[in-house]
Length: 256
Image (cartoon, rainbow, N blue to C red; front, side):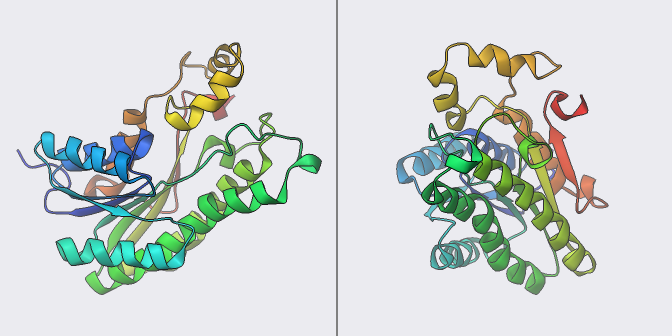
């Protein structure tokens, strides 16, 4: 039985681990050829190996999404390898690690780094993905935002929150610009997901995991695979009437 993305080509940034890796595997399961993009070659190649071991097809491309030349080369490599680009999950991002501080003490260096990757990086990806999709006559893009792009936060990481609010606005605006060009653009807004990006926060305070879980009515952290399934659906024809949407996959976090 053919998958929902049979014959499609899918690009995933931040594909070396966590949500990105889970999405690569889910895309491949549904029949897509996968371009795994990340700054981390070891993790990226591991994801490619996992896709191939599962019977899929994938290549790795090293790219820093905050650099326009890298992003342009990434999209060109995808098209060079597979001839087109049907789906893109612009997922690469950073949390800021342990350098958390109130807004008035937050460093300009950390601000520029997080905004550069999380927000500028998504813009650059779409900037180079969209022209290829226009040439083809359509495509689907999913940007990784966050529940912190929908609400305020107690986490003392203002750049992360600002970047994710920016991704939500960027997604909605781009969706309107290209709605009549056959390109659907949506965002997924995960709750707290058990991934390597969350590890520094959990390890910094042994009690914080319980506090975070308590904020999710469903009573647990999310799994990367649960976000991947949402991304795959948004890229599939089953979501053909969905664009400009911010899909929360958060165990009820923002419903409170």
